[in-house]
Amino acid sequence: MSSGYEGFEASWHDLFWEAEEAPGELPLLEEFLRGKEGQCLYVGSGSGRLLGPLVAAGHEVLGLECSPEMAKLSRKNFPDARVLEQEWQKHEGEYSAIVIPAFTFQLFPDPQKQLQRLREQTNHLYLTLFFPWAEISGDLPQNEWYFDREVDLPDGRSGKLETRHKIKEQTGSLVRKHRYTLKDASGDVLKREETEQRLRFFTDVALKNLLKKTGWEIEKEINNLGEGDEEDLVYVASLHLRPVG
Image 1 (cartoon, helix red, strand yellow):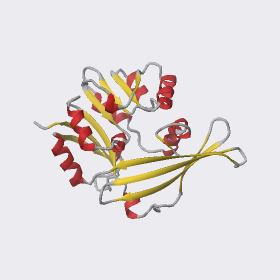
Image 2 (cartoon, one colour):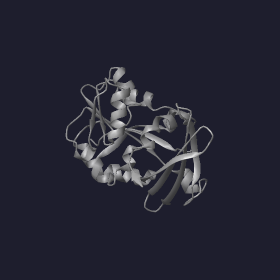
Image 3 (cartoon, helix red, strand yellow):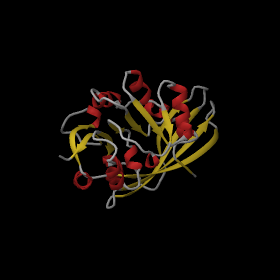
Image 4 (cartoon, one colour):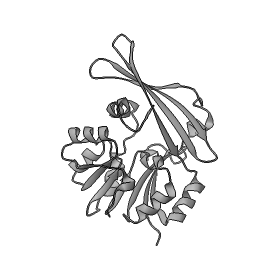
């Protein structure tokens, strides 16, 4: 059992995002960064899927990625985008803005401590958070493997993703295991890999209390990546945060 973005989870990451056909986060990041002068930090920049286009558009953004495989992919795919291979908790520096999209913040083990530390590094913070309604409502079965998605690989083989989760609603904790299966053109299994993620999620009340304790306030909130109606259930919230006062 491995953890983090490596192996199939790293090399297939962008293919699964493309297959999902979900609204993109790039326009939201461009809107947030517009007019920000000085260097910005992108925490969890991954394969450069969003970092590369931001740099190409003229934004001064430094990528920070703890996975060696993802950092290598980023440098290969977007050589003009600078990436540091380091854990954010060990990274020092002050920035005109910090962006943490794609739910990366929810992987941090101590949200309060991390938000307090972010207050020391920037006055402009972008976070994207998700709320696991499907898991909580029981639409997705708990403690059993279920099909997530499958993609065709460039070499003619295919990659299958299955997920298994356990949720603790009272503590706002979600553990997700992913099983990646490589199959040949005839459908025979060639290799399997498993990974595990532990995520924190927040109700509206819990999030407001957390922001209050750490000295942040919401300047702007965009729900469901800007898609859908205001009455829709909020699965994803993108927040522009600023220090209180």
